[in-house]
Image (cartoon, rainbow over all chains, first blue to last red; front, side, top):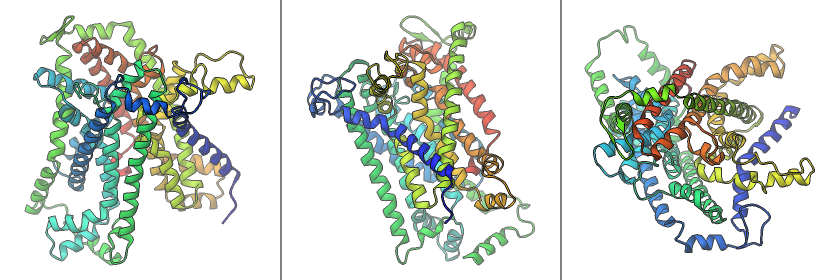
Length: 279
Length: 308
């Protein structure tokens, strides 16, 4: 191997600083959430305690955090499942040109790039005019799909761009029906990528704020609850909640990534050539 | 496998292919495609198209202190388009957008360049790339809050600057200022630039770079004459994300400026808070048109589906 150039070391330092920039602040509030009972929002640490985490479990004055966490988790799962199913179906359909495919593709791009507050406002207005009650399981759910579906579809486009069609042709030549081809050939090959779509579906929903603002009704999701806290809570309990949800996010991300690795390993296993279906 | 591939592609290039009328097979393929996209169409129809139509309709409605009702008035637009505040807000939002774009493009390109061309093994590239993308999957609001202990009057930045003797008095403009807004935007949205640029760079044929080197190009020449031109689509996709996210934002500006700075999104959210829905709808229509024009311009430079 040729020796590293000087620019490598300069760029490596830049990369290190970038990582520090990305993670530094969140580590800081992680540390500060263990602030002593008398401590404030900034350094120095006034002793070390789990007082603020304890507060989080006890104090209900800041709103019902646990109920909103449960709601966000349930909503995340709902959005995840629907995003995976609709994205796979859409991805399969978009492999061929069909009448209206261009228009639909541009709609997907608009869905991705439209300012979130417009979805919030528009859906809120529809429910208002139709005299329906906004609720996180209906209007909130649909609004979040307009954010997660474009990501899911773009991932599926990327997956099918790299998909080796000869496996499908082979299945068809052997007499498989379309459904059998999808079930036994296409899905096993794209399975690890579906974990990626699921990860996007869940986390984007779990953290979504703007599109749920006017569409979740009287029951807050967790990001809405946290935002409410920023305006009236000025103690490290805010950091404790931030640390807790970030740890939770990391656990979720870790689980999904592990699942993707395991699926890929299974594909690489003996007697299984699904992993070779991507070019 | 290769034989099979040539066989299949050979069959497709058979003479006359593509000249025939749509066969029964193609008809049924079309129908299958429609069935497959029908749930997508329903979701986008009800939660994207219908809301946009509703906003456009309501933007012509009238309102008073406590209600809004059907009408056909142009006042909402007349007020919006003649008000000096609108112009100032748009200029401010554009300023944020340009600054954030410059920082995100520079940082995003450098990081992606390092990952794609200086990190040598694929597992290492993937690992470092994932480390860069993990924050993307965590809460934006928490990531904003996490700047408080850093930038506050008694925060880490001020303490460090005072203890090293750079300043005597804590700087007030670090938190709750335009500086903080831009910093938070870059922190939140840089990943949207890193990911597509890295994706495009990984698809550059390495032999092109070898060829440039063999032809005597210096590293800098390779960068400016080979890599940057080939990375343009990725930069464009990243820019579409950054530009639209900043243009439509209302929460980062509100939180990081401490409520002192305005942006187009904040104006809309304020009007919503005051229940002036028709006014908010008119502002939203103007914002949507602005954003769509910008996307349309940027989309001319890139074929998104090909780049994925």
